[in-house]
Image 1 (spheres, helix red, strand yellow):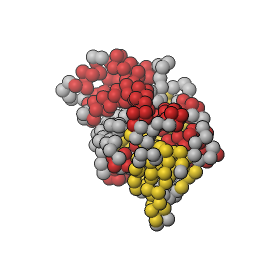
Image 2 (cartoon, one colour; image 1 turned 180 degrees about the vertical axis):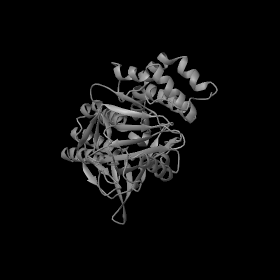
Image 3 (cartoon, rainbow, N blue to C red; image 1 turned 45 degrees about the vertical axis):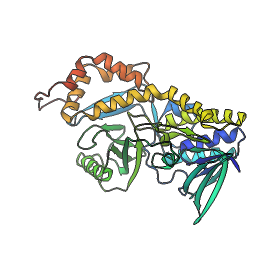
Image 4 (tube, rainbow, N blue to C red; image 1 turned 135 degrees about the vertical axis):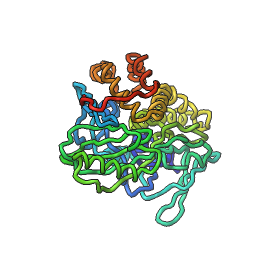
Length: 396
């Protein structure tokens, strides 16, 4: 009998395990993969704010204080801030270090153990798993589902499901003279979202994208595009895939169960990044669970404090991000080209570079600031009928 069962040994699950074990609770983490950090599809860009706030430990491959943003026509705008804004890390090392931290505090890990069912009961919650070819059951006072966006466990226990998803695809590539992050916007190459080329180690990088479906096909096209531009040595690469929720779970708690991280949809809609928001919500979950243990009350009513608190923290950010993404989804490549030109003409990228309240993780204020500086100019450009554009435009 454990105090807490945690499903998932990703960064959110292991951080939750570490915090609860440090408080003295008996914790077990059940993970279907062979180890934490195995076969993950993560670019590994983490804000310095997040890295420091949660005292993270990971292999830092490089710092990032600049990026190039490419319009569909091929022109780009470069954004640079004086101080580094993010670390590009080895994502697997982050998962492993958080697992080691949790184990240091006494959390148990059972790997290669997929959870097939979570069942809340009157006096406990049980987890049925496949372990070494046999079914086995673990029981605890409460369970935390940090099982990622691909799991159906929340839906099976009646918490609903996230209805809006993007599929990510990424590959490690051999880069040619790439020393800063590149972000690409093109509704033909990446419908509804964007692609990226991120330098990691010397001569290496990660090329990836988020799309609604057919990620392998789109990534192959993107790799061929990068090769044709002389940015990567070959378009042949091993791909990894993952799903990214772009909406939240209708309910993130029930009797004896809490859902955190990607499984709950606690992800930035503007970028698909989930580590920072997931860690913030994990801390909220730990505090609420601690209060539940002190009161010996694990009812849905008691645990609903978690749902209210994390929504109070993130709801405005998420709603603004959803609106911005829905607007972008409607734009054609011609309109996106117009927006790039308008943003350049209105000094938006200079505004971002110099704005004192800029945050890598909190985008709501920035979105409003951009709209304030561009209204009505940029929005009218986005909505008015397309006119013929010049063909010989200078690079920014």
